[in-house]
Length: 114
Length: 112
Figure 1 (cartoon, each protein chain N blue to C red):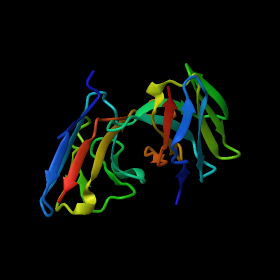
Figure 2: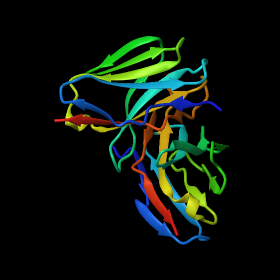
Figure 3: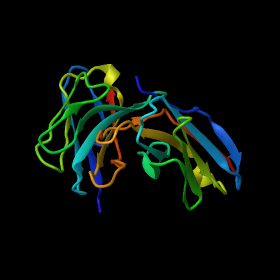
Figure 4: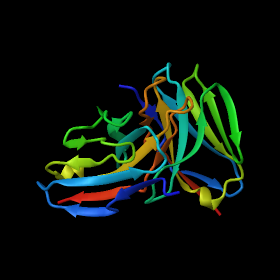
């Protein structure tokens, strides 16, 4: 089972350019999330989607947008990249079964904005 | 601002010892708690979840939750060098709220 896949694995991007980070899950999870991870700051939530067709803002949404056209895909778009968006980006998903909301993570995308 | 606090470490223990990792959180109404392990350059991997006060054991791992004192801990028995990683504590603040808040992690080093 693939679980969650992310693409690309890494990318160097010029400031001002746009980019879409892709995330696909095959677990039929309703909820999906985007986090960024920076040294010393831990994982911070950018955007989330509780179900297909809905999205919400997390802790650090500025400069990012998401869409959730179907259950499996949750792309993250940077409209005009800035150096402060240099980070490792993780996509995650969770089922609405059970009480706990256990989240499972993709392998990540390492993005460098120059 | 709801917070999850962890000592950044590194916590260094000898092989075979018990490693004790601690996490405190700010919201007394928090519902569920998770421990993730993250190897350098890799993604977080869920290793334990706990929802009620007390201990929960899974192999060499034991999660302990004390809601009155607002802390959750992870014990790793018979620590192995392969346990060397960063351990992230995560909290779900309210039932029905999906997103987790993460601590910044504790780096564990198991010395052979």
